[in-house]
Image (cartoon, rainbow, N blue to C red; front, side, top):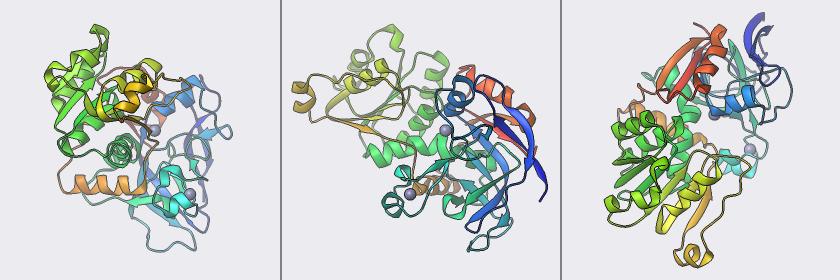
Amino acid sequence: MGNMLAARLVEPGEPLRIDEVPIPEPSADEVLVRVAACGLCGTDIHLAVDGDIPVAHTPITLGHEGAGEVAGIGSEVTGIKEGDRLALFPSAICGRCRFCRAGRESLCEASKVYGMARDGSLAHYIAAPARAVIPIPDGIPFDVAAIITDGVSTPFHALRGRGNLRAGEAVAVVGCGGLGTHAIMLARLMGAGFIVAVDPDKAARDRALTLGADIAIDPSEGDPAKAMRPQLGRRGVDLALEFVGRQETAELTVRLLDRSGRAVFVGVGMVRPVLPPLISFVGGENAVIGSFGMDLSDIADLFNLIATGRLDLSASVSARYPLAEVNEALGRLASKDQGVVRVVVEPQA
Ligand SMILES: [Zn+2]
Ligand SMILES: [Zn+2]
């Protein structure tokens, strides 16, 4: 079918290499997607810069937030035609395990994440199983569709699927980067009664206040668990989400809870946070819950929320780069410049 360009990880810490590689041949149950947009996220920094997440093989094409147009169809695929606009679930899920059958694709037992276990979307084309793509409604641009597949669906899954947020509840968001920023927007949309944002960066706190947080606390200026209480009627929150993955932020997240409160950990790492004494944790009927990625239904439902005008993500794509400038794009994201919500690469540009 000819060749294409792909941004490939050869060695962590070195720039991604733009290689000419064969356009993938979709197998019988796959579609070939001409990638229009691929979002970058913190995981890509871990992969490309830090090297603390293992990959199945090198070189490997990175990119797990892809969206584009169908350019080819495997012999067994039905219901999808060339030219269809699709977003890619961040991993090639198996569709057969008990979690896939239950609609809990976040837990797929044979999941192959793009850019870690198989080639990703930072390329002109990607082959993807037809079961792991979601149609994009008219009117949603590819760049917004791309960031929804992970950057927006991950906090949505944490709030709705794992945190069971109910209208009127008080919510805290610890870490207001890309995921946390979207968590604040979504918590507001879902009817949170009060939203507390916690982040040491002033730009991130200001953005949180603009997007729906009622208060924004700088953790370097004292204990947020104490600082929020006067404004919250001297109580804790019902739901607290952790997007950082550090010991101190995980422990803080649990301390923000009121009786009956749930802490949802989204940030990952090797740390071992210490729980409060059982006498208060058990006595308060508290819960600590893990939330990993998203289900297909999270992405589809977010598309509906945008198509109906209830959710506006037009300000979430902070910068767009052509494929040739993928390393500049990664550098922008890694700079911790808090003005950045999400960075997108456009391979066809
Ligand atoms: Zn990601
Ligand atoms: Zn599965």
